[in-house]
Amino acid sequence: MSDTSYVDEVAARAAESGRTATEQFRQRLGGGGATDQARVDLLASRVIKAINETVIEERVTYEEYNALKAWLIKVGEDGEWPLFMDVWVEHSVEEVANDHRSGSKGTIEGPYYVPDAPTEPWNGTIPMRDDEPGRPLLFQGQVRAVDGAPLAGAKVELWHADNLGFYSQFAPGVPQWNLRGTFIANDEGRFEIHTIEPAPYQIPTDGACGQLIAAAGWHAWRPAHLHLKVSHPGHELLTTQLYFPGDPHNEDDIAGAVKPELILAPRPRAGGDGYEVDYDFVLDPE
Ligand code: MBD
Ligand code: FE
Image 1 (spheres, rainbow, N blue to C red):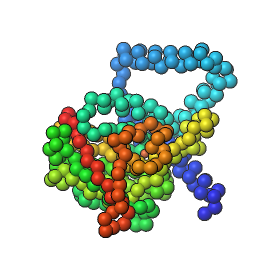
Image 2: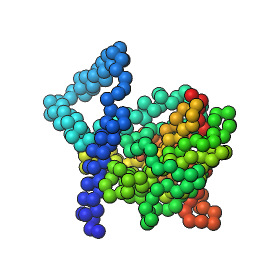
Image 3: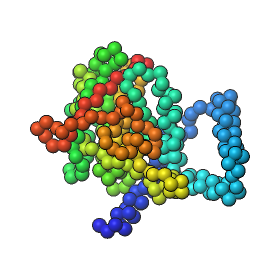
Image 4: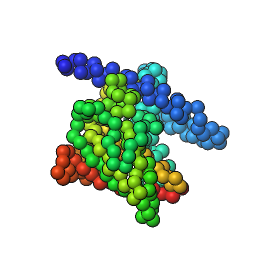
């Protein structure tokens, strides 16, 4: 494959992911949400005031003002509002939402979760292609309550990008449930999940968010990561991500979602291919 066709292929997938993320959001969460008048008044007033203060203090020109309007229009046209919000805002919402927890650390969900991935046994393999590229990874651990009691039958939902950084259902050409699975922990709350190591992920560069990143001289990278939702009746749902040591973007994740507690310590797999890693989850009571 020539360099140009590779770039074109990546660009085509990037544009597709914005449309799909917007459509998924509308179906799952769109339309509902908080509309308490006093809160809308308070929050909208504060955001509008912050924008106006920036304009006055930085002496924003009409040229800059119109560039902003054009860009805001394009974010919508490209379907990139879910991406923009999850990359630059969700980490603060997550921080506030979860600061009472004493169990495992959470972090942002991001734009690419899909509910109801195929159910697999506690020691199963995530759906993947026969020739799925990437180093094999055995991800194992236990789900417990804060008092240490194992949570039998806990649900461990895992989703992640492939070895090229593509998410199924958002990048065309990837099988529907590729690298998305729901694992049911055994009677001791344990799981042993066979998957592959994901690649670092560059957020789409050919849409409005990429335009902002290029115009500002930022980078578009997230470190390689596993996404998880861990749940059990009577306990708070944990939405989190796990990262790999040594990834340079653990220090400068564009989405600000890395925490020290979320960095894995994989080791070469004893008597097998690839890597294995232990990580336990502790769920707070509801
Ligand atoms: C991702 O894979 C992701 O996890 C986030 C938060 C934003 C964009 C792409
Ligand atoms: Fe992700």
